[in-house]
Length: 226
Ligand code: CTP
Ligand code: CA
Image (tube, rainbow, N blue to C red; front, side):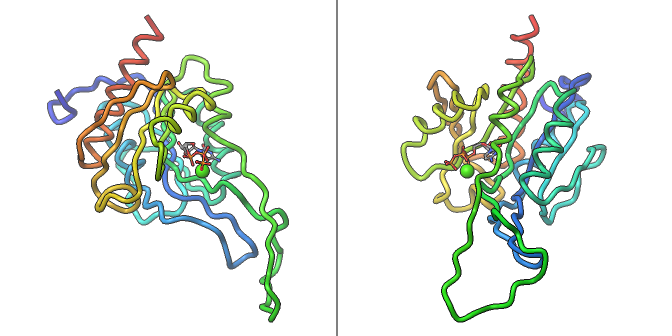
């Protein structure tokens, strides 16, 4: 059964989703970022809403329409995303981190636009907080889902991440498969649990990946609540 059949299996639940890239400003007009399109997270938000959930979508800058009925919280930096996610997640039953959070930000962002020079430029970066790990350290009864893009040893690395961050599962994908990952409409993922158990899903529309992710999260939610 799907939401098209009127299935409201997420009714009464609060689903919080992060999406898109973050921007880490070096000065007021320059930033470090990545090519995340936000499509995966927006698909999760749209399907969760269609299945009856209350949905909060926290997103970095993307070019997508906010799904109807979804509470939208636009952010730019990882620090802003962290604050928004921690606040929204207090009342959440499921939290899904699809965002491509920048791992570092400028240690000392300049207040004014920096002029160029002729010398090589070194910029000091400082690590951003790990939002998923913070959510995991205060997990409560929430179901916590992450995403990971790996170029090698994917299942092993993803299982290790799930354990380290206290996530229930991570959807692993590879950046090299055309039409999937960054920007594409499809995704080819492997579900990886903290235990190291994994399940390869076929190549699917991101909307269908979202449906399956939510169904898996709902199964875990019922299990923890029973
Ligand atoms: N994540 C997060 N906060 C960060 C970095 C990552 O919440 N500062 C989340 C992502 O949204 C994703 C999961 O953690 O759901 C895995 O992201 P990934 O970049 O693969 O993990 P990292 O711990 O940053 O490891 P790596 O060194 O491989 O980048
Ligand atoms: Ca990272």
